[in-house]
Picture 1: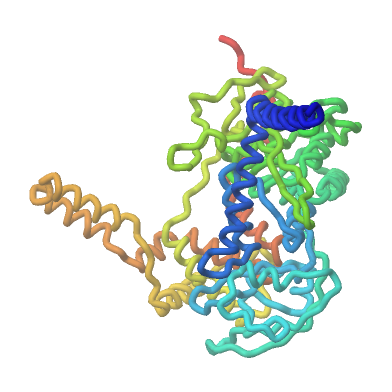
Picture 2: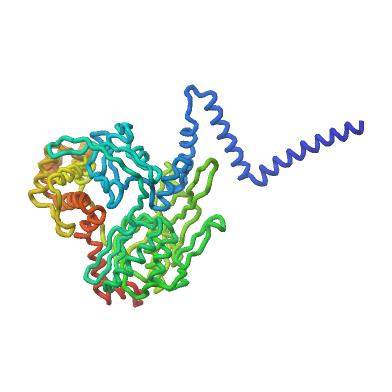
Length: 560
């Protein structure tokens, strides 16, 4: 009896302990309980679907879509990479990958991808692939109907592996001829400094990325330009989407004293919270610097430009930067997977964070918005100049970006400029240097004739707005009263292709020239063409040519 009671008491005690453990876990650590509960629920849902859903499910696809949707609710930078997608992640981190070295574009009419821009010195350029080549087969596999991403994945692979590529190349008669290439994949690294030059003793360095180790190339280029006699420097960060934070600190160190705090990261864990200082003796503390930025200048580019601004070391020229103040790290996952996730925010020397988009507090529809200027906080540079957080890096000298005409968007979308450049190159084995090349009147007339022959249609926004205005006027009872005025306005806004091609010829010619030059002189040639009529560059050169204005711009405003 006693033994039975002891056994009974033991069972009761165990039950009590289980209950206590359960309830203490639930009440004392509710967060962990909620995570465990939801993971169990998710696991059960997947099992039930696999067992009872009417159609057979692909477990990899189903779960992957669930993971991607969950991560998309956080921010665009937190992503999951299964083992098969590691190449994409490595390319992002190192700015290099195994492939042929060419941009590709998708032709909507042909439903096929085409070679858009082979990079200089890569397998694509070496074997003779040209922009406009239509991609037909890879190792006998037809590429019809495959999108750019699918084709890109097939072109990439392990360094040293080879494949057969079949293309159709346009000819002068409007047809195509088949070509076949044996291509060996190589390590492809996007050019970190695609172009550098000197403008009247002013050095110019175009820095395209902070992935890989661009600081080494930057140092080499700067010392070369300095040896050639430059007295000031323009650093072009426009379109630079960032990369490694450490590389931004390293380049900042070339022009700032040792021991300066360039950026501080703050996150949930100790590992995510760090302070990055300049660790070496600088290359040059005195050379005047301007930094060109725009809306596509992001992340590590904002650290560099923001640090220069906060230390009053350079005049920032251009338009407001993107506003990405979030730091990502990678975490290993089971079965060879990796997650790139946002772990912290970074703060530049003045103490401000440049993050412009509030992903944490979303609107009711799930959308996100930028932090309004009214909610930003004032900080100060080393000299006492006012700067603000919450909206990227505002330039010291603002240069408004010209809005491209609507017609140009549709000409690019329909590949008309691309196709014209392809035909132009067939007729011209060579062209003058990028500095000297121009689209002649005869060239532009040929282009206009091609556009008209193609029965080009495009969306004219003014006509859309006019239609909406008429509907609103009719609804409110003003249409009859204002009919004559509306008819007169409609006449002026009537769609006229000839007029638009002439009116916007400057922008269209520039785009045509850019496309043609890249066919002969690659990325470097494209940059040279873009710099010909560059308001940002001219503003940067102007301030560097005026030492008094330069010094005044970097000084605190005089108190009245």
